[in-house]
Length: 343
Image (cartoon, rainbow, N blue to C red; front, side):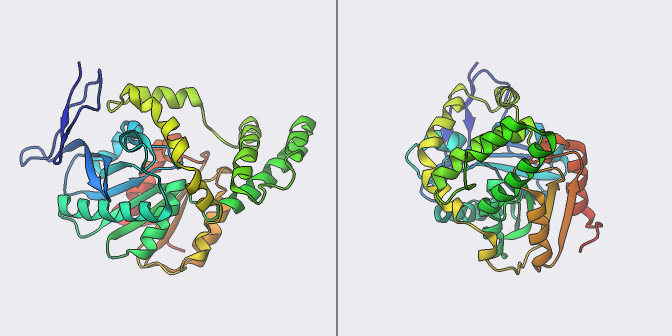
């Protein structure tokens, strides 16, 4: 059975064969479960809202990738809904937004504008003065910049798998991979990495090619944790899933070349080290895809009204999925009572 959802803007048939009952909050039932396309910065972009009470803190989720929309995995974080109103955005060039706008090329500039318009929309919708930002991996790049530049709109910034400088990430991760291969006496792995030459190289497209080899060996060494089949299964089990969603990665691949070039030259150190909003990093202690050591060092150097670091043991690049109970406890403690010691 196909269902149609009604948004405050238009009606879209975006679900198929799923049990999804969209609802907006009412006086009798303040919970929200709403999927919608909203016109943001000139194009219709997909937002999924989930929460038990509208008076809870509203948090905009900035997914990783770029191009890895998270809305189809939002159900995995349903335990968050009792504490927060989460808004999952399929970014320009990702997921349902990419499918609806296959020619909308993302850049740092237009995505920062997108975030601003979405936050203004959420402030009006939920009658909030500020919105929290939760960013993962690639999302921490645009999230950090936005939080730094728009303190009047941001309640706090939370970075997970925090990216400081992509090139430096690769250098540190590569060095650790080499160290482990040498320690294991893995001549085949050492040979394949040595063939890469200077890593990650001085060209974005060169880095992407070399990264795939390094990631393969990091996976073999247990330094990264990503199961493509599990990822696909989780997406297909989502109440938001539509078969067309499987085409999104192909659309994204055609749109993201310029964004990868911008990322190659990015460093968070090129922006002010003073924040006017609280900054929290929740990092996987064993993350070598985006080495936590770089985020820890950066956090020590910034000034903010409050800054906190939490390391989640036995987790890597996605601690909210790898250690969901521990992660949610940390998240609630940070936002709820602020009892963790700052440094």
